[in-house]
Amino acid sequence: DKRNPGQPEFIQAVKEVAASVLDYIKDHPKYHEHQILERMAEPDRVVSFRVCWQDDQGNVRVNRGYRVQNNNAIGPYKGGIRFHPSVNQGILKFLAFEQTFKNALTGLPMGGGKGGSNFNPKGKSDAEIMRFCQAFMTELYRHVGEDTDVPAGDIGVGGREIGYMFGQFKRITNRYVGVLTGKGMEYGGSPIRTEATGYGAVYFLQDMLKHVGKSPEGHVAIVSGSGNVAQHAVEKLLQLGAKPVTLSDSDGFIYDKNGIDEEKLAFVKELKNKRRGRIEEYARKFGAEFHGDAARPWRVPGTLAVPCATQNEITADDAKMMLDNGIIAVSEGANMPTELEAVHRFQQARILFAPGKAANAGGVGVSGLEMSQNSARITWKEDELQRLLRDIMQGIHDRCVKYGGETGGKDKYVDYVKGANVAGFVKVADAMIAQGVV
Ligand code: NDP
Image 1 (cartoon, rainbow, N blue to C red):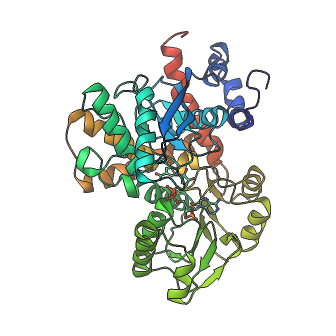
Image 2: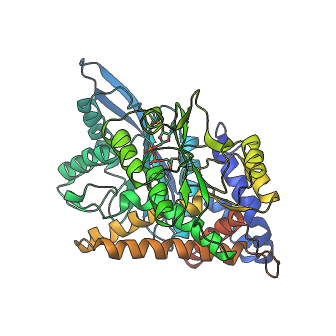
Image 3: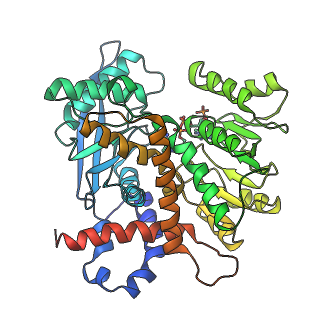
């Protein structure tokens, strides 16, 4: 705590990983001898810089930008850029640390990093967003590169922002390389990157169920959020024969007892992606229930849950309600949507619980494939990428079972939190040991 003052999220993340891996380290002393966990918990470097830009009224504005390069033992640093007023060094260190494990789990050669700024994009004009992105990249370009560090989008950074940053990198360096992922299809983006996180979270759910002899077919699924991840989670749930019945946004949630079908999902995509409307409209159009006041959907009876909105949206009380309603599996599409106490409740009840680190890694997995395509200057076919995404998720599941499975347990219980942490740790740790004390 003394070493990282004022960084509670970072300290919490390191403690949680430590709790999972310490037993493993005890049984494998080489990791202790090489001080691996201590080295992983100290980022390779943290760059902090001034971002100076002019708003539409001509006022000069100053923000702070960061890039945290946590670990590049298994590949170039990789992780998103977040633009949100809450961004600070501690939060980015926590995210870069977590990203190191998530990226290792994908099986692809990607290290961990994260960056961003305390810039608030809400209410800014398109021209202001462009000027901010250009100002941000005017410093960031010295620290990133296709073989060094490859940022992507995150909260507040979507296709538009990636485009502006890519344009500025190209202008400054006069090089056309895959320095960012999440690009538009016209300039080096990858097929199915948009679908990858939501599809991947449901593939992981499918794999957890298969491991205990079940399938998603016929199950009622509770989904939160209505953005990119939620939409594609619903799409894949439908394809696998499940019945998704809820969606939410920051106003509240809809409950459609008849199920959200393909036609209704098409309406949600149009509503959210084109018109930037509110989910309440769904309830009016299809005669579903709407629960306002920022209510979350966890009280709705269902046997599967895929939280896809935001962090800490499932509390311990929500978890109890879900368990009372007979929930059998939870797959985190969002980052850290389940509070720690709620995770413990799920684990005590021995239901299937997949942490975001494993379940939502499909997005960064396809970003890794975008890097490969850019390096080779080709675009693979969509069905090839669909197959690769499926393989990546299956591989993550298998690694979690290897390190989190109970051998000989009669219900084949797998601690997916432990499995994900230990699997990610071992891969990065072995690479660090091989590369010496650096
Ligand atoms: P979007 O911005 O597309 O969608 C987010 C959704 O969550 C919106 O419906 C939004 O509602 C809702 N939401 C946001 N904040 C809150 C809140 N405080 N309370 C209730 N609802 C809220 O984001 P994504 O779908 O891309 O991301 C969702 C989650 O998945 C995030 O945690 C993200 O970090 C994580 N993730 C995303 C990946 C990706 O590839 N996109 C990859 C890995 C993780 P509203 O419209 O009202 O804002």
